Length: 193
Image (cartoon, rainbow, N blue to C red; front, side, top):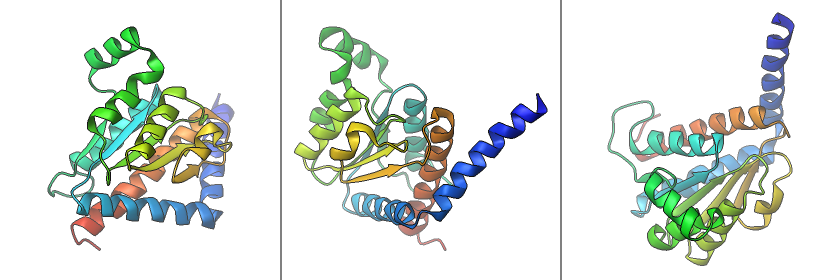
């Protein structure tokens, strides 16, 4: 069993080493960070969505922005779109699950906001529809996916594709990337070095 555990840790390290070597991906992380800084400085908000573990990641990152990350500071306006379960289940029941996020973008999204869609496959229809609606409304759209990018690649302003096709390794890297973005944003917004 120790060998199995070591192999999973090594897989995670291998993916992160690929991230570390990919200059274009690192530049996209920087671009996303700068865009989110601009969004917050212009009194916009960051909306996030995902399914399953990616929903948990969306909620986690929204909390890092709206609560705090490394130090005490003013809150930043960020929200994971799935946190109202009454809304989520009503829209899924009355319309379809594919509409749950796009309807919230219609209600909450405004030009100048940012929308982050998280999907390991890049093919989650409800997130694709949210990203389309976001672009239609003038939101800056970002996708975090696995290596293929899926259908989301054609729907967003910037896509960050983790170089893996294994869901756990992708999700581990999504949180790493999200934390890096949060730290850049927090340091820039609140004049930390």
